Length: 142
Length: 408
Image 1 (cartoon, each protein chain N blue to C red):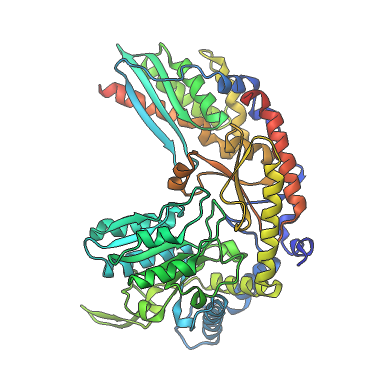
Image 2 (cartoon, each protein chain N blue to C red):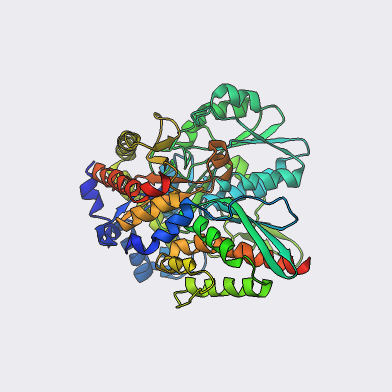
């Protein structure tokens, strides 16, 4: 078990300098999600226009894995259609199962592939992506 | 007490985790099992198993003797007046839920009060929320002192004549604080209320005498005291248990069954519907033998010594915040390391073979009171040594080094 497999430099960079952290004033879909087993929480806002995610912002509290994953996710979904956003979430699930998946749209995400070797931490990495799925659902209903 | 020697009796502790000798510091979540307990369960299944309290064959009699023998041993272990005051349950949670679902629902009237504290584990909090809602009763909290202890003046100010039930942890699973149960019992009784004690964290470490504590109900789990999972017990004063209706119905618990009406067995059998946890009770009895052979007072002294040593070692590390009082604490230390999230701390320690707990410890209201979302917790038991705490301290320094950039 190598810690460096988990805590890659890209991950620590997103943890230290989170992208899209904060809230937006404009009308947005808001999802609040907890990880009840550990206390991590995320509040995700998606600004959906013409079926596309124009902007994604998040606030929350959690470990380096959950917060860096949220930072990457909000970068990756910007400008994507709701279908594309959902497809990204699906591919992220595959990544967590240990499958070889590429993220051409946003390669930083591939740094999280090491989480697969730390089963107890997978739920940390998936929190933001579960919030995205819920956000897409809500975005479709609006 | 020789912890090094005791440790050799726990097969699981002999392994390496991630290339390092295992340091197990999560006994407050669940303790490990000595060979004598594992062997007692195997012996039971290989020689004596059958269903209890029915049939006339020899194995049935042996299983019944083993199960009821375990009840007598458990009664003696906690100082109950008789084995009829011991109900076997799945653990502390089930025991507390039994009191809340049966006793509380029969005595509570609209406007009555239940009094608990903000340091309670969810299992000694949610059952009372639910019981209060069902009866239209009020749930009240004894405020905590800044160091997480309870002042008797606050108990006196919170408990009133409308209070029917007071329920507190004997020892907090986060703060490690030992609560003044006997003094709280006096206040509860003066106001005509009963005292329920969550003994999950105290029973593994301290000599328990429910009559000396003067509590009315006392709940604990086997798996935190070297016994197997799936077995625990509720002590209740006999007159109180006799006033309670069962909450589970079926085999084993009935006296007479008619097409439209049935009657129940005497206590405690009426609360043990279905085939009971026989092997669990056998394992619990073996765990009690194991602990008593070493001596509960010895175990308690060892744990307090380790807690004190850990407090000193950890507070010497820059950036460590320890929660709970410095003194009057049992064998655990809850802490945070700078801004490093406890999950990350726990993962770095795990890579070094050190097992600790990270999260909210089933105490979300207490986490809010502490103004944190999560903490790390190292908890100790009779097989831990000062060397284990040294390894923890070294691991924390490594975590600091590893995350230095991230938190800098």
